[in-house]
Length: 437
Image (cartoon, rainbow, N blue to C red; front, side, top):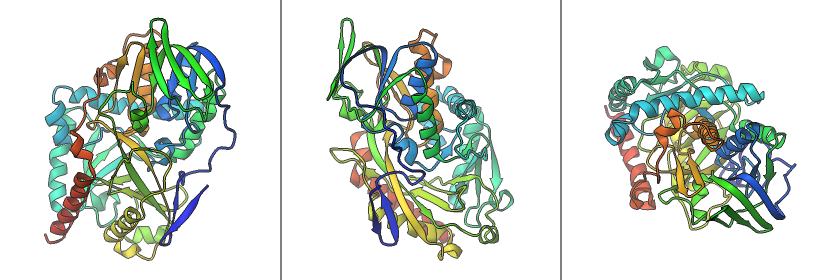
């Protein structure tokens, strides 16, 4: 695994949660026929292929790297029962659908918890729930409004006081989302990969799909070593969707980063009031997240997003972003400045307009996009719902809730480098104003 030092932090082009697999599935060579071809081996693609195989379909999964290597194993490990985005904005954009979308998010967490148990995946899952926590009085007021919206939409939430709830002293309180919890996403992703490789699915790794072409009799997928002839196709390419001409437009990749510290004495955490093991996120424009891990470290991330270059791929976190994340950690936890950050990594996620989405982009070519900020629970669920539809089930109500002919998307400038920098600057101004009151 290639690493280099950014200050005192080792920046990795792979995930820091676990080691890279060495038992690669073969690359595809020659001509292959199947009922369904799944493009992409993240959580959504693997769950979709596994479900199809369990239900008797002849399924082929194609992955450019190794299954689970992307954002599925690189995120902060929050299994959330909530949608991404500010509740007030979600109500503005999706007032009529918000109750159905909230139900979908709640069911996603329950489904993924059940999948972990059913497959016996040891991913350090702890059903702690998660809390959206304020660092200023203004944010606290904003969250109270958001909680009322979420409750009206049917979400399982309550408002908590930071000190009573066991949050670090920096965090005043916020919305506690009772469902979900924390886990090791690397162990989850590669545990799901093990289950998939042991199933009846045909898995081809290091097999990049160059084109997907619908024909009268089905769909043809072109890969460097041959072709796949499928009746139907699932595009589970998420942030990499723009690499395929047939993928729907409006899926914008952005890079997110996380940093992990050295192990911390639990007594030092208790001294600052951090007794809860619940995952913490903040309601900034670009959220911050802080959590304790099973290995005794602290993980923190996001705070800045990076716009995508022309070509995606494995990369190391930007050292300026890592330095800013460490600076933010010191601001939130001044008494833990002695704790050394040790390593950092990151991954590409897809942004539509805060929603997970699925649909049919061409005849017999379906897509699912779910890794957009809260996708750890939603990705396996959405992939499974789509698989059930392809084997003939009536569309589930939760699939109907996110079904779109094309993904709703933000204007192109909204995720440009100047806009993302402006969002970061606005958050820092908000922090300074909050400290003055």
